[in-house]
Length: 119
Image (tube, rainbow, N blue to C red; front, side):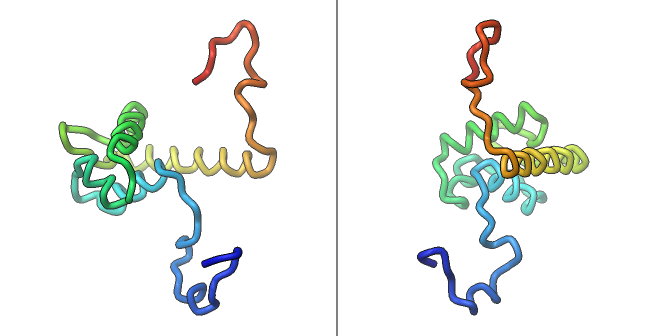
């Protein structure tokens, strides 16, 4: 694929979402969801997705804080609360749609003297 084009045969043979760009968090959640019958070590998830282990570990920890994954050291699995997972996915897509329509807001421009610094 180059120059913003692909061969029509490649296009026709591709899955519907094959060309959709996904961020690392989406890729990890999707991987765990597709493989929901297993629990995984962060290093194995990283290897399978071609990501850095430290980055995967950090993302998994954030997902755990939101109850979207389960963790029993050293293994990680997708939540068994499919309704929660679907709600999080819908909210994520709504935010993406708003970003596409209105542009991403810069946190610095929203910060006032009365608010804490956002990292």
